[in-house]
Image 1 (cartoon, one colour):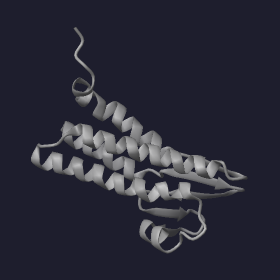
Image 2 (cartoon, rainbow, N blue to C red):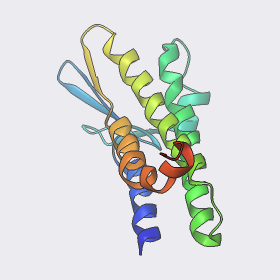
Image 3 (cartoon, rainbow, N blue to C red):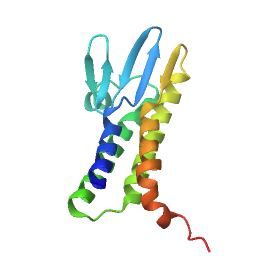
Image 4 (tube, helix red, strand yellow):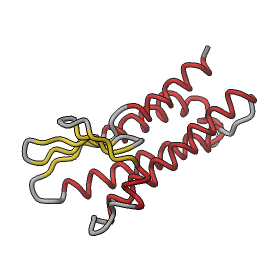
Length: 147
């Protein structure tokens, strides 16, 4: 049962909006799979964003596709570990920490632009999963044993 809860927690990281961007009165949701305009329900997927719509965009926004790739690696690691029973949870946790850092980069880059506010919910979700789900299992292998 613990493995199932852990996998659901990691899946939840990919479901929550990673960054909520508010410019003026309009919001855009940066999801793990794409950019969603809640008003029109228009979704620009990660592939199109990365390879079609990137001309003239700030460099900090390229952290988002990197975070999506890192998330897929973390999810793959957890799925493989659940299926086979062989996983180095430090790898999965490390990838989730990197996902959190990429979304902090995106939020910082967007917030420093005039008139916008970006809230990195994905960072909170990824780092919470690491702290509450992964850390108890890997603590002994990361920290030296107390004497």
